[in-house]
Length: 559
Image (cartoon, rainbow, N blue to C red; front, side, top):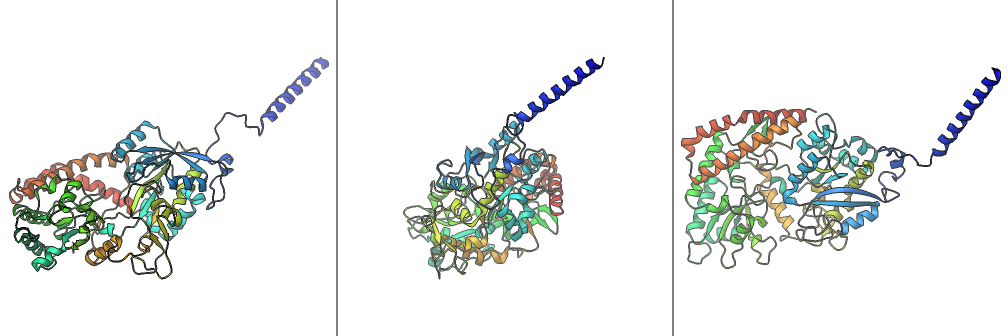
């Protein structure tokens, strides 16, 4: 019996030794088939210290879906792409999405769950961030920024407003923004008038809506182009051009009317949200626009023509035909920087005082594009992805990604050179933006172009487009930037809110646009049909639309 127990104990000891040896043979030899978790020692061992380059000790590939840019020939062979890969040791496998189908493709990808590691330059809306962030599709970036985001943390420290704008209710940050504080873009609802015609007819720059009416009438009847024909077009607009809708400038002499972004016609005053198109002042604005249209002072094509058709009128090769137009810059209706030089002969009309004394220059709130960089739950190396994007905020990297190579597309300013804002300059653009090229990303993805950065570019004098736009904005629009009423910022929304808003806003905005055109053309009589117009909007549940926006605004401002 004793011999049997000894034998059993010996067998057990042998089995224990064998199992221990087997276990030890696998230790540290990488034979396990389990995928390492993100953020483990495997990932950490690749990273260099935050803020240094290269980012990784070994080359890492990120799969990135990017919005196609008509000014970029090829993201894969782009000079900045190659330079940044060499500096960071991060290779990008690009999936380029055509710009015109960007939103459709984004929706399909999010619905299919076939995500890339990174979504880049796709302008993902705050509502989409909120929906897919709470579902775990988009990773919260807070901890990644804290550990790896050297440049992002510096930006947040300098500009806490940027951090606040991209922080969702609940405290999570799901995306990094593109910061482009285009000073002239921030008040882009402008009108431009052909100054030589004013001079020839002995007319002063209009300062009220009534004075504009008289100027446009003189353009139509007094042959300012001097060809003996009644071919002048006093005012022509393209609804498809940048900031060129028919009510974008003129309606702000009657009621605050922000036109652009996700909250069209929506404003906030004393913490309360409302819309411009139900107000009695909107009705008065419609009557004024109808008067201009009925007397042939607004071209009938202003509701239908595209930007190319408008530019053909503005650049008529023989005589000047176009008296005035609206848009963020002269390139909306002329050949910007073109050989004819006609673009430079148009100057801005200041914000006009309406019959009720109203003069608004809406703040378009375009300086911050949210959703420029997001990491999905498919990313194996989110720390590396965050470091890669974080580096794009560096001063030199912003210049390279947006303008190109040093001393070819841009250079450092020389001692004594003055910037656009009249202060000492820091850099100079050597080639004009807007040409198809393959040396930069042409304003795609995160970058840090603050007002200080943009206005520190070397001024090239009175013919410098940036100088012109700066001065026109500062002199004719900033004085009318209101302090008691504002444009609603982009809002984070829940899935339920976003779904309900999508249906309601399309129905309402389509109807408002339709009736705007009908009232102006005269197909509908604004006095006789105003009550029906208002009751129709009520029936479309406009009250609920405003209520949802108010809920989202309150959640965002009180987070």
